[in-house]
Image 1 (tube, rainbow, N blue to C red):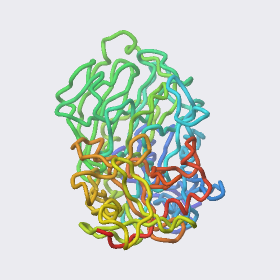
Image 2 (image 1 turned 180 degrees about the vertical axis):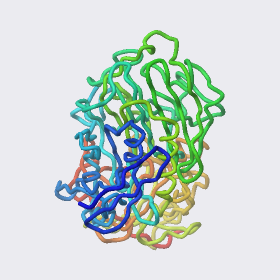
Image 3 (image 1 turned 45 degrees about the vertical axis):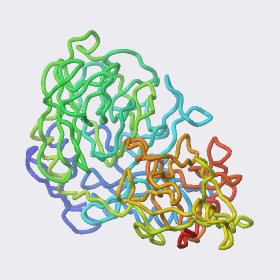
Length: 507
């Protein structure tokens, strides 16, 4: 290995010579933390390497067709994930993220969260795994995938090496989707209990992102970056409102939490431009249990310390450190994140559905190819429709394509015969309901078409639950996963049942 140029200070950009490629690679976030004297004890990302020399696995995916797994690594040391390898491996089937590997060398990998004070949604109590394709982005123009956390999804490691315990100092940052959140508990990344239970005040220290007001809040209506310290989401010195903690809305968001003996801070920034701002820096909350802290050292993603798993959010990268990082070190990390050039990319693929057009969706499963997605009252089902069907039935089987109510990069389907009513999912059943204007309705009524999994037409993912696709089962429509606890999640004929040929609407 050729000599490596070492960092001389937190604000100095290091360059490392990589012998295998003969190119110079800018220092990664964990190189910068190490230079500042607060090295990473965990480094997680499905989008890129967080060390300039890291070329190992970033994450593992499992495909639905045969249960096979593969690991996804950077295209080159220090580089962006090899999304093409994932796309090839997952072609014509579904894929889940099963492991998010720790790049620090300590083996602090994140896997499917086990049951805790709150049980998981699966039959064995474990949380769901994230879709491998739910959060596509680009970094410096190269495609990668983030971790889209739907309610019920979570990752954890209860046997962590090197994490802060008790009142020891630590730091952490995460790059998140600042537009994907809710008010449920708790979309967290950071330090938590090792037994999946709520042990009491001060037993956690994690980044929280969302608009919950159950314990604390910032200015405006949210969402906010706060700290989950257990039995409280804190925006400042104590429970309640910190007007200095702003509502944030950047599509890509850098969130920073750090804590030490009777001190802690919140910092944040647009992850695509600009510098970090400090939203709070000061003493620990005065309420009993938070000074000194009693951190336990597990690592969680997407859930609370007791496995509270009702939250949603998207995670791209994050680290945890030993020691209390300086503002200068964090500023260098923010500059590195900005230089990665996170950007959005298409959420849809396959045959295009023209905005404003009237469409009908025909089933492709053998024996059901005369049936179309329709509605009977508020129930969305499949019905046999043809050119000789009644005008009423033709209208019930026709849908106007609209920009996604919850995300304009995807689509919503408005009823042709009941204008103002849209297909939405509720408890995973598809319904036709009037748009009530709520954030929940808008998200539940948003779908992202892609090329049909069986090679025909389109398969249509639920935007908020990208492991789930519009499926007909016993002639009723659901958003179904490829295998799961519900009868309509059955793996048999899944690809056919979720593939629809799109034609000009009957009405």
